Image (cartoon, rainbow, N blue to C red; front, top):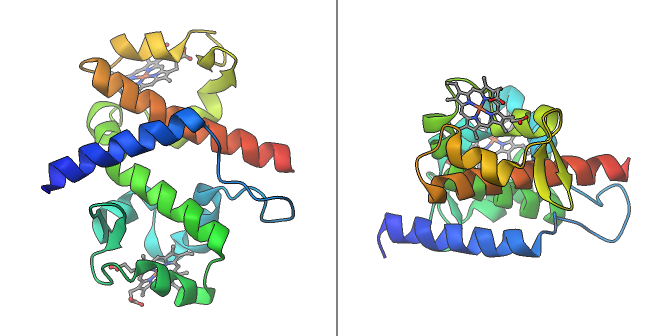
Length: 179
Ligand code: HEC
Ligand code: HEC
């Protein structure tokens, strides 16, 4: 399988997961919803910089999972012990985030970064989730429609970016509800 096929398959899997639309969650407790972005900022960023850039520099997409450029498929084992280690939930959330960064991140860099800092930032400040999906917090515009004509080329790109923004917003809201 070529890298491109692997990427396409991953995107399909990611979109299917998107339909099921559940952020990483556990029963209860302090670990209930792991926000991988906040986790990375709090515990990894001081050494590794921003998550997206870190992922692109040090990780890559294998056939069905994220692999480390140095550690290969032993990434999970490595992370369990690295710098105090991460729990199972944190690991799942981190892998999910890395996978999406690797799959969709380059598209954001290419099409949106000139004007917007990051997808996370857009999701946090400009968007909200409603029964109608993702809409502009202040404009009320439906993002599924808006993105088809805003900075993207073709439906596929618009769908991928919608999926990425949706995911970010979902995690942000889930983490807020926990507090
Ligand atoms: C105190 C600095 C420091 C912190 C904090 C830190 N790391 Fe690291 N990390 C390193 C160094 C140095 C290396 C390379 C040496 C090694 O392999 O141990 C590394 C390597 C890695 C690799 C290996 C990548 C590869 O090429 O296979 C991953 C993945 C990783 N770190 C993820 C994380 C995550 C996730 C966190 C937060 C939970 C984290 N690191 C926190 C310093 C740090
Ligand atoms: C040339 C600059 C530029 C580029 C490139 C760009 N945007 Fe924007 N974006 C803007 C401006 C200006 C606004 C605010 C005005 C508006 O709503 O059109 C905006 C607004 C938005 C909003 C909020 C919409 C709302 O109704 O609240 C989202 C979400 C967004 N952009 C996403 C993206 C994404 C995703 C990409 C990449 C495909 C992208 N933008 C590319 C300039 C840009």
